[in-house]
Image (cartoon, rainbow, N blue to C red; front, top):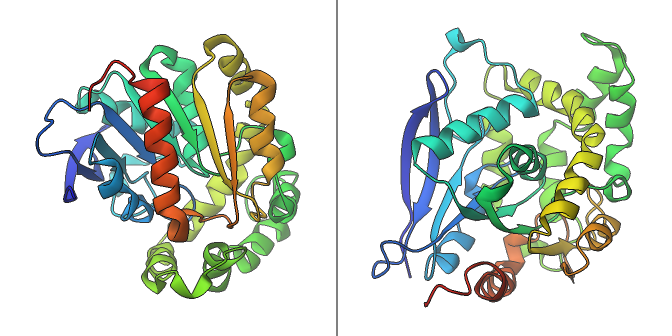
Length: 299
C-alpha cells in the first residue's frame, strides 16, 4: 500500500498550503485524483482513502485556508469567501503544474470545485461527489439556522450568535461524524477531536462564521453549476450517506436531471460516510474512474 507524504507549497501571495499525497511506487506518471475536504475537517478526513486510491493514482489532498494545517499570514488580509478558496485552489494547482485531474468532492469541497469548473471546465475528467451538493433540494434540515443567518444584516447579529452557539461547538462537530452511522463506535475520536481543536484557534470561529454566511452565494450559483453539468456531461458518481441531515439524498438524485448518465449510490451512512465506509467508497471510486475517466490508462 502506498504511503502518505505531507508537504507544503506557498501560493497566492504567501499562503502555505499543506497537503497530503501518495502515488503508486511503480507508476510515477499515474493520473491525478484530487481530494477536496469539507467542513469542519481537512485532508485528514482522507487518511484512510488516500492509500486505497494511491494503488493506481497519484492522489493529492490539500487543506483549504482556515482548515487543517494550511497557514495564511495575518498580513495577507485574506477574505474568507468561497471565491477566495477557489482562487487559492487554482493557485495551488498551478504551482504543482496540474492541468488535468479527476476529483473527489465532499461538503465545502463541492462549491469550491464547481466554481473552479466554471473557469477551467476542460481540466476536470470526472467527479466523485460524496455528499457534495449542487441542488436546492439537497439542502437538509441542518441548514435551517444558517438560512436564517443568511437573511441577517452583515456584521454582529443575533443570528450569527445562534450559529456560533449551536453549530460551531465540539458537540455538534462530533454529531456530524456520528449521526446516521451504522458503526459510530468505529469512528476514530481523533477525527472530530482534531477538527474541534483546530476550530478553536484564535480567529478561526469568525472565519467559519464568515464562510457560513457566504455559503448563500454558492446556492445562488447552483444554476451555473448545473449549466456546467449540462454542457460538459462530465462523468459523475454520487456516493451519498443517505442519513445525512446537511445534504440529503435528494441532492444526489438531482444530478441525474443534468447528467443522465450519472451514477448514484446511497450508502447506509451519515455525513462523514468515509469514516466507516471507505473501503466500499474506494472500490466504487476505482471502478468508476477506470471506466469513466482514465479508460485509456493501463493499470
